Image: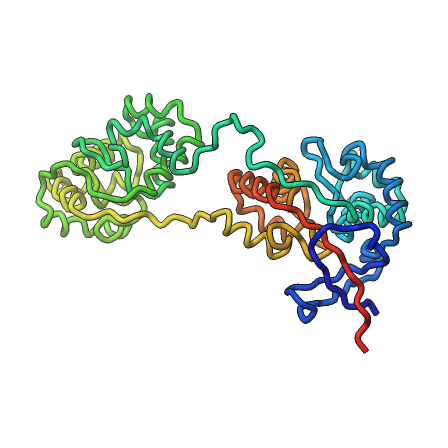
Length: 410
């Protein structure tokens, strides 16, 4: 039966490397210790190491691994991970996966294929015995400007729109639509309709022709996150009459126009009337709206426009944007606080190369690296999330784990 064990975080010393078993303490003090119960004892052999095992592992690593991973497991090659201070059991299991071909073909499977099981165990123990890499600096290129946050990036992308639509998307020019409060998916679709010619407006087609998908998304999110407000333009119709006439529109556009297909509340009335005319004559191709608009006369359209213009727009319901703290709390559940894993089966992330972390997360996202748990966690990440997480963990201080054998309970 394996002994119960505890760990302490701190500098690892080969002099203390009498046989040790990878066990886990979840809270400070011995009362928090739990023994790791492996399904097969062989899986945890890498967590036992004598000074002789470590010395033999060093000889194998120097011959087979150091060219890529560095003489002491600190990589200087782009995309190649640090191995120093990594958890022994995790390294052993990964080496086994490369040796078996489960990781596909390439340099690593070729290197591991010729190593015996005993060599894999000792190499894992050697790298686990080393001091881990130092955290990456906060910025690798201090002369490079900091990346703008999402709000700043959206505002910059929307700068060309402000002259007609207002600085925050609240129109002050009759005939120009307000963009604030619109669901971002709707606004993206509308901009793309102008680009593709489905909506006829020579000026808008010319203005959006050069916009890429990334800029269109930024613009849509910028307006969706601004404080909503009514268009600062006059409305000529009778809003009271318009309220009754707009009842047929509520099914799609929501009560008082605060739906998402699109929201009409607070919209400029002149623009609304013009849009209704475009649906009627077919210059906006939408069979459903053509039928609805054709049944509404010009006076009724003006009244409906006045009703919607008098309503206060509501902010769209956006999917929650997760912060760095939100994401790292999820990652830390398996990989330890600040990426310092205390489970010998899970890799430490702290002080790992950012380019490697970014690569491996994208491999899980795309499915080229197989793990049901990691694919589920990573598939919802955006490119920005991946870069943020890689940078965060690369800058955390790595702490090695010392596994200390405790006497068996009597």
